Image 1 (cartoon, rainbow, N blue to C red):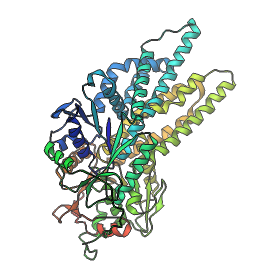
Image 2 (cartoon, helix red, strand yellow):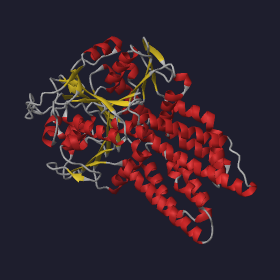
Image 3 (spheres, rainbow, N blue to C red):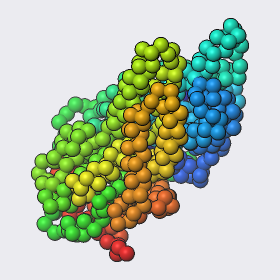
Image 4 (cartoon, helix red, strand yellow):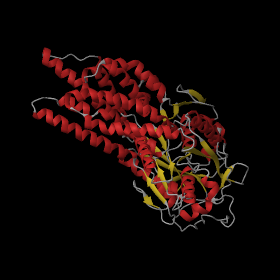
Length: 590
């Protein structure tokens, strides 16, 4: 199994498709995409792919992983067993349990993606494929996917605690216990999780191909990605430097020169033929000037025009690699002022805001030197949500510690209630971070917040998350209220109530065109144009306003909003001068 990984826009999908075609000449190969943005079919020239494998070349089938469909199939098979386990392990009625199960699992798309990968590796019906090539989502969400066996372990630990409570009660009553369907389910899920974890850690069976570009921001994220893969015990088989101009200073890399974006099987084969292995000559290279060929004396845009694109909450969206982070940084630098305090924040699990600004940006509001009124933050949403979980579990321990001191044996109940937040859908940590931003806006400290989110597929999931998380929170609160009768968990529910209020406020804000909007960044390339059009439709379908579409790296200004191609954009001065070159077409606001 080969995972093709890297920062958004480096050419992961192209590389995965080309590797799949090459592997298929030696053995039957399955090429699949786990990226919810789903551009693999566009690159192959095969049209939209489905969850069923489709033949795209001799020996090569391709599919788009549909986590929602796998989730539905999983629940169709196991929902009754899950309800039984929760019924046995909690004080809930079945009428309460069923909505809890239904509210929890619709958010767990990545868990079911991992389960499907395990099925591909171990189910006999997929044994006809000898090679598996995986086109992944951009860095942050791929690392989350590779961590999910641990998340799945936490979920299984909760269910196991519930089932063990049932086993304990049965043994206490009849002095013996006979395993049933619930035990079989837990055993099967544990075996799948273990098998997948073992496969990921076996370099003879699984490796990553890291795709990068010879650009400072991309190189910085790639270095972090390689370290993170090592921490997860996943072997790196090769590094591919795509769209290279000259010979990059990357040891033992495979290099692909700058080419027109390939499309279709023939184009992908030509792209692969252009790849060559390279051992660099470590010589001093001439650095390109960041704004070579451009003068900042005459501006196509002005701060006033740029301000018209900004709302109190502005989300800069787009496909990975279109320059989304750079646009967000430039917009913040150009519009911030002492009387217009601005917070630039990244919610991407693999943030690059600090790289683009050329400064260290931690998970704290950090003033940006040279830009009065501007602060930046690279939010660690996972850490924020972990603090909520730790606080919750500490309070649970206090409550059950009091019960034990009064002679009540509540060990099973303690384990169950402590692990309730394991049911949180993956991605709820990012929503928690955005809810914190909503609270910050309500405090009135910032005139505007500019958000650099994850690329398309995960941004759309994030925009859907408020309604999902509210449903999950309401069901979880009902469960906590049941346990409150046993031990008094009022304090333990306070954090969840605050979370629900912030989530509700955020959802209302996202749907208010006067307070929030999306600036879509795109490129004049067929695959990017297609994904951008889908993104715009999807954002509007979710009730959000699209404040504009910016065509980045434009060869020449046009009637639309555009930004010129400028190599090596790093630092405040370069970003400010670049923003001054944008051609802005401001839409009238109703």
